[in-house]
Image 1 (cartoon, rainbow, N blue to C red):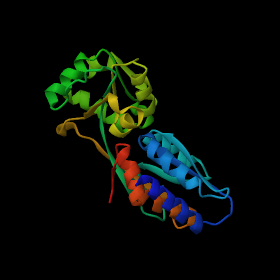
Image 2 (spheres, rainbow, N blue to C red):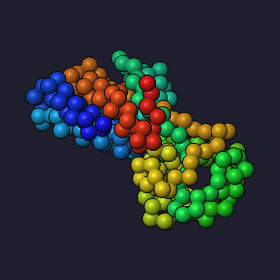
Image 3 (cartoon, helix red, strand yellow):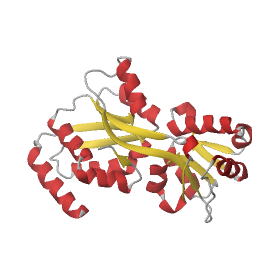
Image 4 (cartoon, helix red, strand yellow):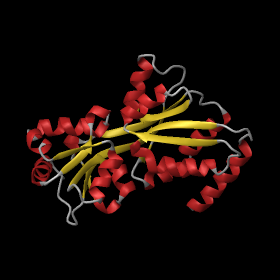
Length: 251
């Protein structure tokens, strides 16, 4: 089914796009790295010299890099960040395009996964872990900020920080988990699944749930190439790619 959908998009996009060469720079939160990489690769296969070029980082860092690059085309980051940038006039002229939601959670390098179904289980798991990695809140990491606030509410921030490693982003967090350099990794569930599904412990319990909506903002969303790429992201096939990689598509 996905193969047929892929062939359909390759054919339809090839017919709809012009032959002039251009590069479109997308700055994106790392939580959407795998689905965006897959979809942009498909899109680029239909181009005659035009292509999507992706840059991934934390939500905050991706936004900063987008704003600093005069050649940037689109920004994919959290809806909250885009809303704020629109309200303050940093982003002007266009609305955000909601794409997908992801939940924050835990990954474990151990074969037997801990329980985090409620507050007490989560607290015990964090206290019992020998080492923990999470994205540096100072770099604008959405999950990192949430985790920092969460351990403060649980009253275990000192204990956790003594054994914590601050990673540059969720991708780096998962590299530490996969290399067994840390016992627990805190990041988006999508980043866990994209790195290794077998390491997934699960999302945080309801009282500490963090659902992050990723949205897209483009400087010129009506240009033929950008409009076609957005259509691919919002298509049924695009939704399947997002879902397969741990994100919940926005319908």
